[in-house]
Image (tube, rainbow, N blue to C red; front, side, top):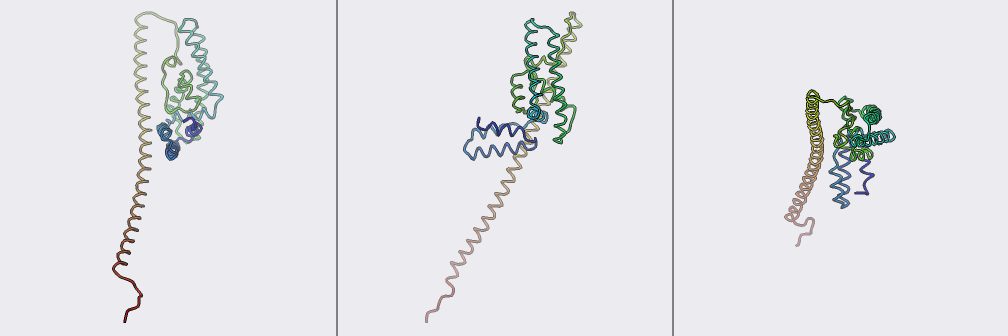
Amino acid sequence: MRGFQREIDHLFGLPLNEFTSARNELAQRLKREGDNGAADEIRALRKPSVSAWTINQLSRLEPDAVRDLLNAGDAVRKEQKRLLREAGKPDSLRDALAKERKAINSLTERARSILQQAGRPITEATLQRIAGTLQVAAVENDGRELLKTGRLTGDLEPTGFGAFAGAEFPPTRSGSTHDELSDRRRQKEEHQQRVTEAQQQLRELEDAARDAESEAKNAADAAAEAQRTAESARRAADDAAAELNELRHSGPRGGRRRG
């Protein structure tokens, strides 16, 4: 599989509507060459969502801006750890988050032009998903690697330290009112998380359905062509059989009669 890293990078850099056919062609070539394991791994690569594809292009077109974001995310992670150890200050984390937010805003604006050049709709929902994924990718280990390589396939959700990204840290208050507000905020966040997960699942299922439909159409076209070839071969065989039968029953022509 290591020998095909450039080809995988090429796949994720293609226009989105070319990904599936190019992936399948690569998998078929690998299978013909006898590398079934690599072929299966290539075929398992999921087509990126629009937002993930846009970020993959950002990684290729704006490497310096992506590097700035990763550096800002690294600073956020360090300040988060210091704050949790009670060795840091909220102001330091706020400053780090501000730099991270600036880098995200810059990349999100660049994403607008990428979507426009690709003829894709520029919706607020798409831009929000791009910004949200960039925010997570800046601080999560797996996300950072996918962002650097430009191989995202879907939107990222915060886990671990990433869940704190963009959070505010107001002065601590006590009392039942604060507890009630915290509960409401937590319930709202949990509800939003479920909505986000459902939306992501829907997008993944829609992508899978489109891929399956495309593969089914290719298979149907191939089957139809094979059927036409078989019918043509059968007609040729029937004609040959008829000619042979006629020759067997007609006897030799043009010979001299005996006296």
